[in-house]
Length: 615
Image 1 (cartoon, rainbow, N blue to C red):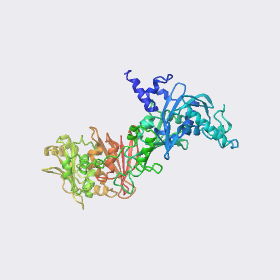
Image 2 (spheres, one colour):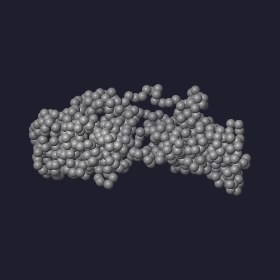
Image 3 (tube, one colour):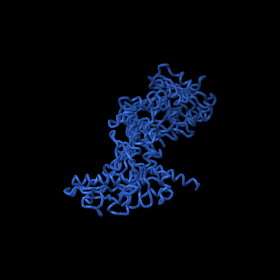
Image 4 (cartoon, helix red, strand yellow):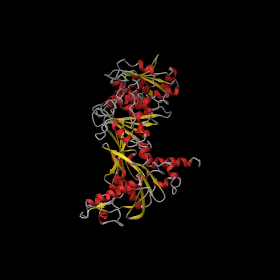
């Protein structure tokens, strides 16, 4: 264990800082990397690193690394920040040494008002230039030390000389050699969250080694540090992974999730039945200090298609600019991947149906007409209602678990659904619970009102002939007749209404009462028809479904709880694919970094809502 621990620590250190192990070996004052090296204890050091990150603003250009910073190296007596030697902006080369000196070294004007504040980063002082780089400190505490490395000593000296001459010619007064804070700097309001910027700077490697954004930039906004990460389809935002690293108890920062919103599965309103990748989506996560200190880290993940903005024009131009800036090829392949071939983007209609129902591919293909646009036939209103009530009744008695209930496959049609079941007595007992039972033989205490059963060669038929409606039926295939009769009669504490051919008055009343504020039941029916895929393939996968009347007439709010369900991406594909049973629109989404307590809210054009909780 001890022999592998150093290599793991080194790998994590490289991931967080962007530094390499070979560089660390040449740093005599650096021990083996450890999480403690990423923490700052000196307020002046925090302020120095905060001002450097806040005012350098290297992320508004195309560079080999996000923020135009290759890595951050935390040593015993200083922090070294390695700048990319050059960047690109508007088809021109940007000298990072010139940019750093122009943005960081403070200056003022002799006639400036006291409330105007200085230019550059207030409080930063120049310690000197040597072969290592540009050494900076802070006027409040000379022990604070940060070194900008990358450009040569000659380049730093030339840029400093040019900057001094330019300010002098314009009547400005350089402040970087002043021993203490000047009046102009003292009048400048300081931000109360230097811990945040310093923490991000020391973990700069996450934005190149974990993030999948091709362009990253940042700025301060309303007592917050906002980082914008732009992604190009088909690269998916790695927001869950990035947040998990930033909040890691050992290597991350003392952050907790305050807000979380994801639009990864959002689709355009004017193209509701296809995943559209030409419309920009935005996910955001807000992180705050776990102890309530001021400051927020706002992460905004933006995704778009190949047409990615006026300043770049196209994905090819952005790739060219990044390549000219020296971006590694592997990083470019990860952040700007080629779109998948069109013929491989979408499984066949039969394959999508089979994944939902558990049918064989051949059976699913035979169930579809050659010109079919949907994997499922449109069910009658009464068939939709019966399937919805079956799902809700079973999940009310116990969570609907396909494996536990013996479900092998489903074969939905417009006026019936056939369910292939395992031939076992306990399976028959589970499904017999759907039959209406009353303690007095008249009032159903459980089960589905009006449901009757018949034995046929192809299985047990659960039939409901509702007054004034078409017949709906559920066929249970695979159960032995003797098992069904034992389940239907032997486990009854009262009288089975399913043995009575006509409906009782109480059943008619219950059916009508449920119909009065009734919902359109296609959501429950759709979930039932896709139950194998919605629940997932796990041995303990299960689902509970309930509904209650919504705000609009004949509209329901549906609630689904998933236990050991499929991945979020697969689940949302099922629920939003219009070629399957539902074709809903994603409205809102909230998901934690560890995927516990996630929820999704979907809606249809008529106002019905489906709320999914994934535990």
